[in-house]
Image (cartoon, rainbow, N blue to C red; front, side, top):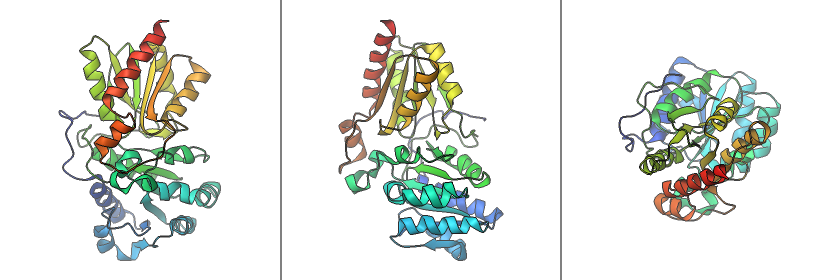
Length: 323
């Protein structure tokens, strides 16, 4: 892992879906076994350039997500490396049986991409707003669940996913992410990425909540609270070593995720803490609610996913630590 943090956290100039397409095209140019599957969302995902470059390796199955995963499993069985995409709720809860049996149980090599996670589904509303996708798939044995935070991470992680055998679920923002890392940074799947040091409390954050966590840490620093921040971009396998180390060194943990607190990042961290190093834990995430229509900033406030909400939880967990 070789990480360089961005000098400024600004919105990326290029949408993540465009980086996803370009990276897959680059990988496909080097590996003729890589193919792309979609379920009537190729234009939404920006995959038309891939189709133009590799028409014989592009498969739009229509609005048949479960069938798409079955097709991907069949392709994998004969040595193809399929990358199958749909919106995150359709790529997970609608396809769970196919992912579990046809892909994971069969020990195949299928790469699943779910886009617009959590509140980033925005105006597509509650039917398209997955707060449960990682929670569903955490139950699948040996699956890897990854949430790249920006373009630099997406490029590096996609290349690793293409090379590693197994079932992978990538939770992907389609539009413009906040830049966290400089180009050329490399990462290790399964290992949390330190972003900021601190001795009072640790925040483990994923996805869009990484920027919120860093902003919260900067605000809290002005109040004399030293906050450690790590990007836990791999939800499964979770980085147990990093969790235990931070629990021992800071004595308090906060998790922040654009997902339900049930069976997501917060639950994964809580499990490690309960079994290894008991310290106070607070979770920032969605508390057992359905999605709704609205712009992302509005939805962050509605579901308590802002840096201010993280600050509240940090102060609460430090108070609990002191008792």
